Amino acid sequence: MMLPDALKFKVDENLPKVAARILRDAGFDAETVVTEGLGGAKDVTLAAVCREERRALVTLDLDFSDIRTYPPHEYPGIIVLRIHNHSIPSISAIMEKVVALLRKERLAQFGVSMSVVSGYTANNRRLHVKYQPYRLVRVIIEVIERCTMNERDYGIARELKSRLAGMVELVDYRIFGSRARGDADEYSDMDVFVEVDRLDKTLKEKILDAAWDVGFNNFMVIAPLIFTRNELENTPLRSSPVVKVIFQEGIQV
Image 1 (spheres, helix red, strand yellow):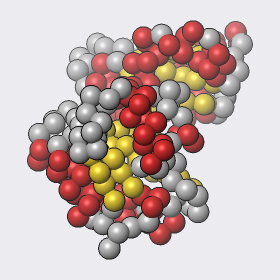
Image 2: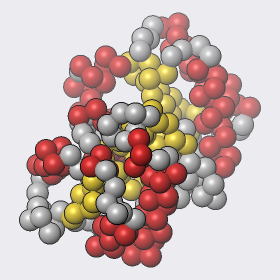
Image 3: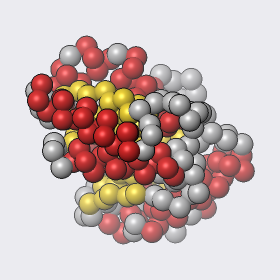
């Protein structure tokens, strides 16, 4: 039985055919970029086609995870798979998890708006989901087969986020760099991206002090990069290589 139109998919050419097959076997309408003659198409072209056809794109291309270039409300959906093992068995396993998640949240019945804001931890146990029912699908799913942050780093990142949430409204908060990639050593800093709605000298000092305190208590140097929403939306900073990397590879906690 085919499931509702709100859950139609287009599978990118960087994924094997098995990804589309798993979606179809689960009852979803899934086409591939290659079979529709879009192989080699530019990202913006592919995104436009998916929007016109009302299909959620499933891809390995991290460029699509930049919500400033591809705002969730403008697309039927973008599913970015952040996985380190691109073998067919690995991709098959993560696609089965995607299908299970879609079914668990009853998207077929409700056509909900869903965003997975962080993925599996090192032991594949944690998956945070935020969703709102009774809307057309506006979905960005970032599925992480194995979040390369270890449990200790994840806990420290959550501790700092909790401290900051008590003093400022956080627009976005991500860990990036070696601690997020999983190639840090015991002396590596924890790089933290903090986006706030407003910022003055006093508030900036409070954020830096909180980062120092949490880092000191955990024998780690925490290095925040602090930006305002206006800086990221209305200045050339939005297109800077550092910011692009943060939005493509940073891990929300």
